[in-house]
Image (cartoon, rainbow, N blue to C red; front, side):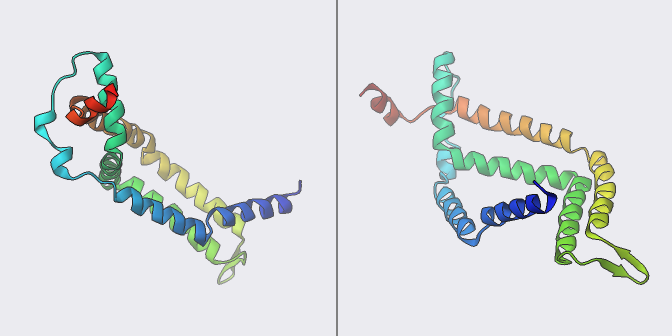
Amino acid sequence: MSLAAFSNVSFSQFSERFSIDRLKSEASSIQNKLANVRPPQEFFDIKRISKPQNFGELQSRVSYNLKYFQTNYFIIVSMLSIYSLLTNLLLLFVIFFVAFGIFGINKLEGADLEIGPLRLTNSQLYTGLLVVAVPLGFLASPISTVLWLIGASSVSVLSHASFLEKPVETAFEETV
């Protein structure tokens, strides 16, 4: 397979993946998910907080609460993600730098960039972006940020899911 044929295939797959109809359907599914947000009175019900008696009860609580409060947990993880980016400004800068760099290069639509006597091709622009972004990316420590995000999200979500009792109504549903 030639490079030109490969680029045509990958671009057509890319354009199919980001079609307007698909994006609209995903936006409506996100709206449906946000409609499932449980109210804070139910999410922070301190009357239902207790230590699980055994591992079986812990598993049962976590399984139920992860399904029931799924959207609330997604919001918590999203807020922790935003917090981690706002506290690591270099990583945020690198993300914007790469995104706007790719956007700017794509805006040329394959034409060379001419600045006075200097003429740069797309491959040279992408290489320059890579040469600048990779060292900045290593300095921004994205791996430690992702590991912190995984740890903070796990502790937040799993502690809530394991200590919050299931509603009394679910006990009757399980016995039937």
